[in-house]
Image (tube, rainbow, N blue to C red; front, side, top):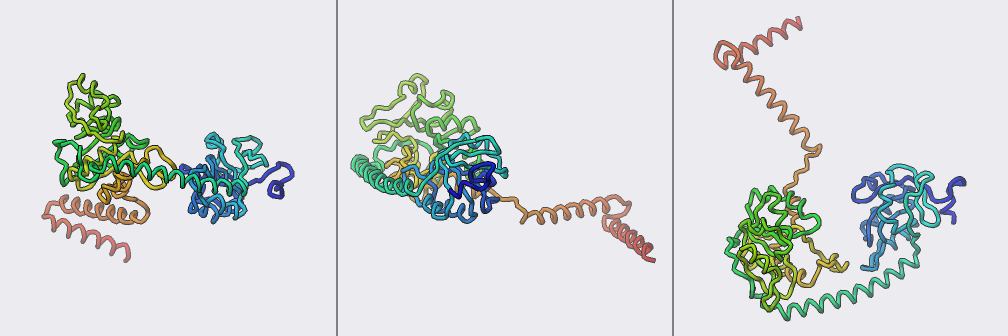
Length: 394
């Protein structure tokens, strides 16, 4: 209980609040005895160590330190370092936090700014962390057994598609040897496309719009060469923009949205497969037709997503990306290549360039302003300046 008795006037652990969420800058200012506020579900060892190095008195998490999805060691590390943990305060805490202001945590997990409560969570104990870790271990094993069981089933049914491209339509688009950009309707796909503008301008890739992301492409000024998805969720103007339309279809050939295509008078091809992911079909399409590099925006995929049981991290997504191998690149990697940091290290270059430009302008003005030739005007001006300096020092 000594942890909760720092002052007699206001009960609870007191310290400076630091906003260490993704949008805050408190992590760089975090010092010993501060209260770190984060929004990190299933905190990893690396993130926990960054906090431990700063030696905060407490860490308040808007999310849960362990959700039970994965067995993570971060909470163990923080508790072993004698850091008080408060979790699951919710996002309403973000509205009340003031970075650098004094805060206070009471025994029941309430977070106060001065005498005002700005959030409330739950105090995390070592026993709860250990129990959650053990449960998550078993849950992960069960999930991965089911995941790879479904993966094997998909290989049984779609081996010819993955091996020889059986069922992939002949699009008529010139893909072979070119870069291809596949845009899926992910949460940040619009911004990702904006960050790829220099890549698009330089390489003129084949652009494939998936589902509603095809509308986004048209809104940003890019006409998709191919549109893959259910037409029911795609605008009429986009479907009529000139791109070849490919409808995902069941193995028996039935394609959802075919009636809409017929009503619009737009030609379309079907792509029968045992998956309902238009993104996976678009990636396989670009791969089969020989795209040199395939950039995917709006649909990131990694093993952590599989562990966390992300709905988009399906067995077909894993197999598709394994099929594409090194030719598949996430849009964030491409946009990073086109981002140049204009930090202090290059400031002196701009200063030197400015001086050179100014000197060149002066030379041009002097050389062209006299009655003689360009060189004579420069010589006369230089002699005049030299005589002036001689007069000053006599």
